[in-house]
Length: 311
Ligand SMILES: [Fe+2]
Image (tube, rainbow, N blue to C red):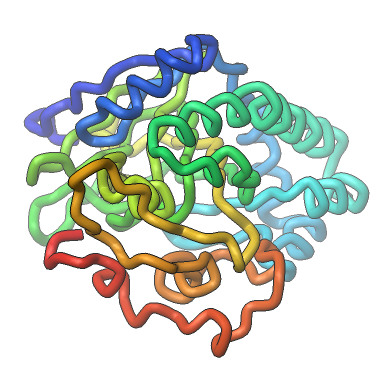
């Protein structure tokens, strides 16, 4: 974010496009990042209100105790499941504004889940050639608060990190934001992902899709850094993120090969084998089925699932 970082060239698609248009766009992707348009508007005012009231409240403490809310020096986030948000709303002791904010945020996420992800999953299943993808379940809804803070840089001169580089775990991620900071590593260079105005979000994919597509639909390596400061301070930034992933530990994650294509990822994997090295930060409560190491021997590393030296 120092004015010299290139901006990623990201194609726009609408979830209202036909399934064949969506499927072709995904099949043709180079880096696996899209701007997704015609979406519900993310309620950032309400998300800020929720964080403002919850951070020091009894409800916030409850959410932290259950692992639904995590606070770090760089950011705070609340992982929302329909169940724990219902509990948070029911036990909300901080203010009416906070209750209204959580309720509004919950209905925003529900709209996205109902109208948007179901269609994207069908298009993705077609693009990848893996019908299982169409049945993946919503796994996680997360609202994030990157606090305002004094501007600084890393010792290397790089912009200050807010969230280190990683690939997401699951099937797909829809990331709404109200400010710059998200970057993607494409063709050996960090790029800024362009801003996403109201009614749009960044769409990208996770490990499960990368493996199922045999690498044809990549899980982009991404990170969050501080945006350019204004008067010496980095502005507050929020995101609303919807992660879609299989939740059953027995779900197969099998590369779907095209004719004459060589296998690039391990065959025979199940979700339970990937959890320790790919999704260690997901709360145990999100997984369905018995996670048994004898039935699901964990892969020893992320690199181990790849049949070549290149992930
Ligand atoms: Fe991520």
